[in-house]
Length: 297
Ligand SMILES: NC(=O)c1ccc[n+]([C@@H]2O[C@H](COP(=O)([O-])OP(=O)(O)OC[C@H]3O[C@@H](n4cnc5c(N)ncnc54)[C@H](OP(=O)(O)O)[C@@H]3O)[C@@H](O)[C@H]2O)c1
Image (cartoon, rainbow, N blue to C red; front, side, top):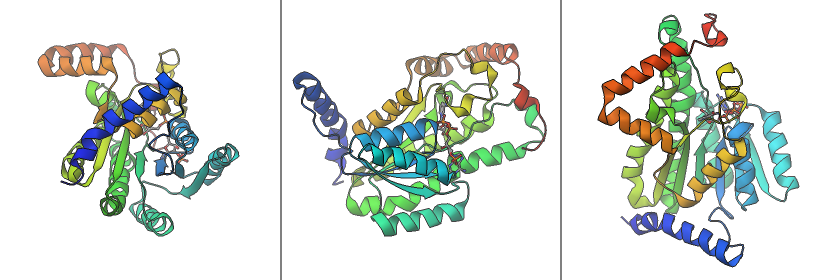
C-alpha cells in the first residue's frame, strides 16, 4: 500500500502546479520532465501530436509504430525542437514483436515511466455486413486489445520495481455511447477499458495508475475514409493530444466528453429507450462505401 497516498495526491498536486503557473506566470516544470514516455501510434495523428507535446514538456519520448520512416520524421521534429526521442518500429498486432520491443526497451532504458496505448484501428461496419468478416473482429482485437495488454504487462514489472507508472489508453467515447456499426471496434476498445480499470485496482498500492481517455471525434487519417465525418465537429490532433497530456500529468481515472456521459446515463437509466434512439440512428445513417465492400482487405 506504499503508493496509495501518491496516487490520491497526483491529481490535486498536478492541478495546483498548473494553477500556480497560471497565477504567477512562473513556468513550473511538468511532471513529465525527465521521464521516459512511450507513445504507441506515434507515426501520425493523435500519437504524433502527443509525442511532440510530451517532448516539449521535457520528456524523453519512445516512439512506437510500424512505419519506421514516419517515426524518424517525428523524431527529427522533436530533436530539432531540442527534445529527446527514440524510434522503435514495431507491429503491435504481433505478440512476438511486442515481446521483442519490451526486451529492447528494458535493456536500453530499464523501463518506462509513462505508457500511452494509442495505436489502433477503427472499423465502421454493421453486424449484418460482417457475417463473412470474422477477421474484422480478430484484427481489431489484435491491435486495440491484445497488443496494448501484452505491452502493458511487459512493462509493468519494471514499473512495480521503480515504484511508479502511469498508463493512458486512447479509447473512444463510443465505449460509453455504444454506437451502432462499431461493434468490432468498440468491443475491442471496451475490452482494454475494462482490463485497465481492473489493473488500476490491482496496482494502486504500487503507485501505478491507469487513465482511460474516451476520446471524441478527431480529424486524423483514421476518419478519412468515412465521408459521414467530413462536416462533423471534430478535435484537431493537437487538441486531442492536449487531453492525453493532461491525463498523463493529472492521472485521472477517466477522461470523458460530457455528451458521452449523458448518453451513458441514458443507457443506464432507460436502456430500451436508448436502444430505440440508436436503432433510429442506425437506420438513418447508411453503411459507408468502404464498409459495403465485402472484399478481404
Ligand atoms: N480519430 C478519431 O476520431 C479517434 C477517436 C477516438 C479514438 N481514436 C483512437 O486514437 C488512436 C489514434 O488514432 P488517430 O486518430 O491518431 O489515427 P491515425 O493517424 O491513423 O493513427 C493510428 C496510429 O496507430 C498506428 N498503428 C496502427 N496499427 C498498428 C500496428 N499494428 N502496430 C503499431 N502501430 C500501429 C499507426 O502507425 P503505423 O501505420 O505507422 O503503424 C498510427 O500511428 C487510435 O487508437 C484510435 O482508435 C481516434
